[in-house]
Length: 107
Image 1 (cartoon, helix red, strand yellow):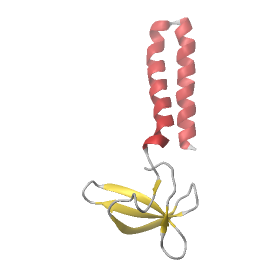
Image 2 (spheres, one colour):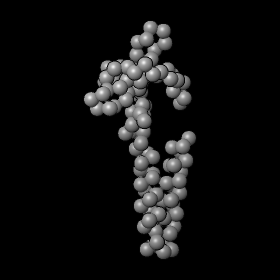
Image 3 (cartoon, helix red, strand yellow):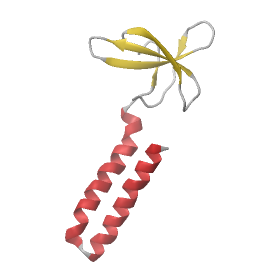
Image 4 (cartoon, helix red, strand yellow):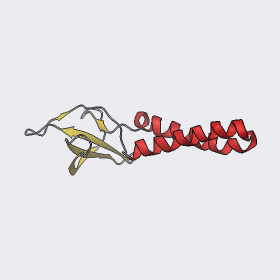
């Protein structure tokens, strides 16, 4: 929801900058640049951050942290790699504790 609001704000700035470009071109540059940066970062945020990984792709050891992902409603376990400081999020299959793969954005 926040991502959609940020994306809408970025697009609104781009449209405002485009309108301003017709009326006063010298004043349009800040709105166009800021709107472009906000829009591009909101669009590519999902590509850059991988949310749930496969158990094979998760490096490090499980931390014992588990939570239910609010967007998917699935149980997630946290892995931590001390050499890089990376935290990986792995979906837990109910019952036997085995993991399965799932794709999506990471924090």
